[in-house]
Length: 231
Length: 234
Image: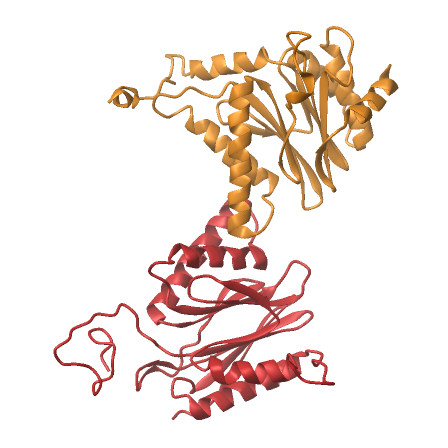
């Protein structure tokens, strides 16, 4: 499928019409879970375009500060540009303040940056994760124009509708009588993230190939790679 | 258009390398009402004389020591109208910062941005430098800050300083009286004594203004509190 010229499928579009869409959906899914003193964020490693695969080894999580990471999916061009601009803003902040930005400051900055482009948005689903000033894990979920919600767990990207309900049930224990949300540990978070991606890869063509999981604690960041089905 | 005639800066260099307009602005500051700032271990105090030209003036309608944010306060020596503008701009800058970062603006950041604004007015077309020096006090990240901003756009961090009329004597007085272990109460006391050095007539809670900034934030002292401190020095 050639999204550069026409956005509909071959069999659906009208041959007489020409329409340029500046956006492309490159797939990808991200999941994040926060704990008392850590936060885990993971993405799959598949970059796709329609029914084609562009890369099996493209992670979607970017490092911002020692305590903050950004997980972005959607239009890969916009993901890269947003990340580049955000990195530049972080550097300008640290030049002026002689200090790195706190997670909450980055979160608010990202929200305003996205809203500046309200009328030609970054086609990106973002999740900003990190440790706040008291060392607690925190997840911020965004929409493409900067609506921001502080959460303890979230999913974003192509398989969000498959994974989010699973997390709502297992991590949040939403609308369940007599069940309390579990105490979040790194082991439980890792298990839930693994299960989320394995399930999503079963049904969503845009998710698969592999997972990269990052764990942020006050001692630094750890990385783990896991293989997924490649079909 | 008339504005085209003023696209050049009115602040120009003299042959000796000085910006004479800024020197004159500093003279306007030195002729203004005295202001004092002292940093203590647990806070900062700002104090200024508020003499009225006539007994008919409604004293409590004019406020010189102004709050910029919950944790930052400001006072001046020099031209009142210029000060008003800078207070507005400082407040706006602080709110814009909060809008972007959802964090209260660190005092040094506010000072830098305000000083940059003051510098603009020394290098822009058709404007003159501000005729005020500002004393800015703040509390963030568990420590006190005291800064002075000059008409040139230069800013200085101080432990204690005096501005306005008789500032040289004021500074000399502070050099003798200041020590690093001052508590905020002592600092207020010392600030009042410094003002007294150049005060003509009887000091009262109607003709001086005092503001303090500590871990609870910035606030002006009430007339009753000022009266208590004044009673202690009598």
